[in-house]
Length: 227
Image 1 (cartoon, one colour):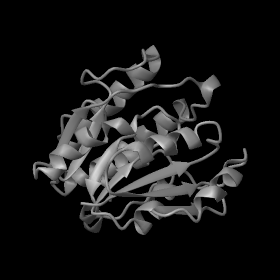
Image 2 (tube, helix red, strand yellow):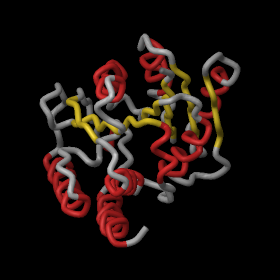
Image 3 (spheres, rainbow, N blue to C red):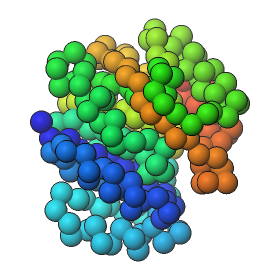
Image 4 (cartoon, rainbow, N blue to C red):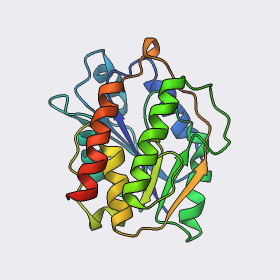
């Protein structure tokens, strides 16, 4: 079963080559779809060498539209039966792919979340990041009747056919609560598995901040009561 790895990229020149090397090292049939969201740090120049490589698709956004927008573009280009979202910042390790794929491949799940809170090895979290994640996940669970431990995880894996059941609209980090709300509403079988995690600080390039958390609150309630 072919895997489509969709990588949204914005100003990740320092980590991109290493991330792609790690993805390529995973012994699975796959295509790698990279969507550059109008980077300004030289990432685009770095991506040119991948444009003609087999099993790569490189797409350039004309303006910075956000993670959700980049993912929609990547999903539309995906040809695999299973899609995995892969951030480019090295926080999530592609070595976890087999574990993430197992519930789908053996027929138990349609969607799999890689949880940072189920016992996998990880860099120690910043306290307020941890609290914010728990608040958002709890509110999301209340609105979806799920019992996830990590709604905001960057590792989401799903059968491509799941995208036929709903339309994604959020352009930025609202993708996480929107996707969760819509897979729950459509009664897809959802599993969580433990993953390793190496979080980074803002001085290392982390982009999500408290404003994105406030926006996520709005999206959680928006997609609970509106489409």
